[in-house]
Image (cartoon, rainbow, N blue to C red; front, side, top):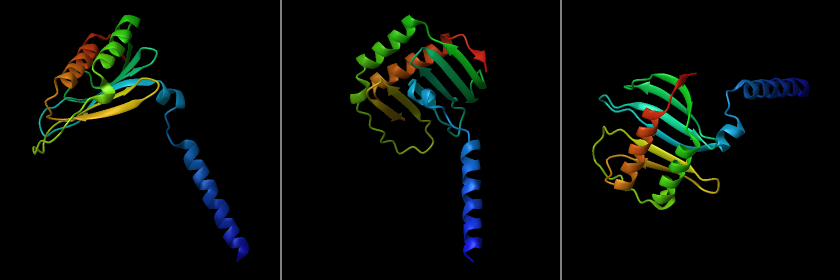
Length: 154
């Protein structure tokens, strides 16, 4: 009985070790180096669905999912000037202290998720149908960057 229990335990541990080894995982540096991201969600209409990410070195990724010009995964880069401008815009917006009230009763609204990590703090703002001119300007800035980056298919 004891051998049977031990054998089951060894098999179970081997299975979990194998699963963990083969599970797709983000590297620590990829997570640590993520500085800014802008993600949009689906709606019942033709809302664009994508994720745009800027890393601390200025490299960028774009994953277009639905209702966008570029569907798929793309990589690009911001110039040093563009990266500095992004940081200044986020500082000027006082990103970590922005107050956003999402109090709409509408059920079919796309949601924008804005994430920023300045190396000390990080925050995600979930934004839908709120009237916040500062967040609207950040979204406009992110959309402008997406449009102006030279993307290469990954």
